[in-house]
Length: 211
Image (cartoon, rainbow, N blue to C red; front, side, top):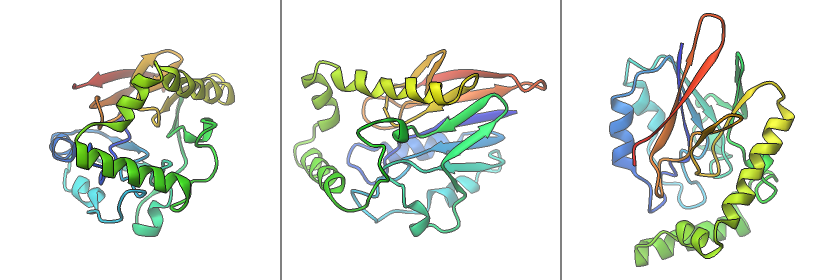
């Protein structure tokens, strides 16, 4: 069985790679495609197309699992037909977005309030001045933000002993057991994971980064 796991495309945001993403989907083959959160950025805009319907046109993708992220937590309010889960478990794998393990994002996300304001302002700055605020902020903090985000992996692993846990959320591709993260398809990365599960239920995880 072949799984493809991807996350953090952030459609609607200025630095999304929509056309590259759609081309990727058109060439994809998988028994299960797991969209591990933040396909859309509902903080920035509600204007969007139903990408799942586009994916279903590819007959080489047999099944789709949608896991909600902190930027599209209320996705079923917009697309009731989506098969949305918080955690997807199969054999020795646990796949979840990961914001629930991050102390900065662990509370139930809201489409209103401070988080929404920050995202809207950031997107406006990026669109106006054509530079990536997220990447700049990471550089200004000398990697401290990334180190804090990686701690979320520790909590995920502690809560799922003996499992291989694949997260998204941090935008940092990682494939160094026990740390697995499919990264993102925006900002400076365009990465995803391919998981091959053998007849005994053992999984082999491969990280692919197309930057």
